[in-house]
Image 1 (spheres, helix red, strand yellow):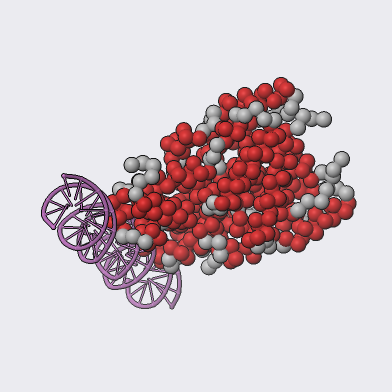
Image 2: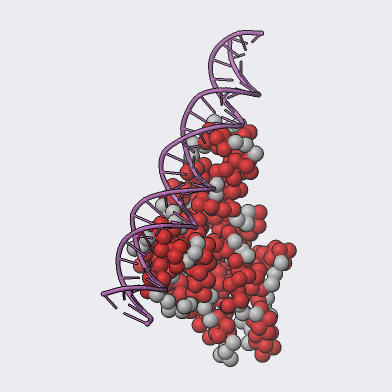
Length: 203
Length: 203
DNA sequence: GATTAATTTAACCAAGTGGTCAAATATAAG
DNA sequence: CTTATATTTGACCACTTGGTTAAATTAATC
């Protein structure tokens, strides 16, 4: 009753996810979702009681898509360089396949920051764990002392933001769609290089 | 008739800017803008004909706020390190004073990418100019050969994205509001360091 | 001060919105 | 096959939305 459910329900949900991520909560219309799913509008309310309920489910789903198993990567005992590469590549994979989710997530979170509270539990990596990991690496002499906040901010920024600013970036640089894809591929190398360089022990 | 205009017009415009940047086009209500301005709803339509027209004006205004005199910085003959520092600091100033504009701009641009065409003229830095500048610096041996796209992406990402992801970042790291402000202040040093390091000639 | 024009308002409207409901159809159980 | 149950639909509703209009008020002009 919660996992697979009826075919129709999945159909509706997928349509809702598409419309909501494209247009946002305020811009999405129940009628449009129904049309996209090829069913009657009343059926939306039969399966999901209200626009809010439907959106809540979609947001949860997209949120999980966007924050993948970060913990499982960070928690391994691979060298930190490798962790960074894995993280960047995993994010670029997700975002390449779902170019709208980043803009969607951050917009809806800005409209409604308290939504974070209900969803953060699922994926949150305890900040203390990361601080601990950095501390250990510093003591090993593997990296220089850095504030976790900046390390995270830099890594996520360089990885995610190009998707959010895609139209501006393309227009500004004159890239077309395939060139943008190529550009993202290049970033798989570039971002880890820069991040790793930025935390290398001072020579 | 276009610059100063009546007091009421400015009052309305400021209210509209506030509501639109907070809630986005779809989430904003003409009634709410009228309330914010302390005037009748019909008066909105007296000064600005429609929601679209009003929004267009606001968007233009915010857009100019967001893309400041990039060109005037890049075009000087100061050393590139200094240009980068100036650019980062200018952006952080703007964003600290207008924390909502980044999220607003990129959301509306994603909803309506063709809006870019009408506004880019005002501020666009010709990509060729930047490429030329990089080329010159490379020939001087001041920097290593880098793709302009990545340099721009990295710089803008690290500067702007923290504001867009502010709620997530705060929740994830446990920062409060003053700590976030402090965090941004630190980035004035950190971002230029990383960017400059990333373009330094290979030793 | 009278008259004309600009500004502001209350009341109103048509279209669109999320949501409901009773009837119709398909599916499952006996 | 019949009955009960789950699914799907068309018609409908109350409310909100952007927008209009005619009247009222204020400001400008003579």
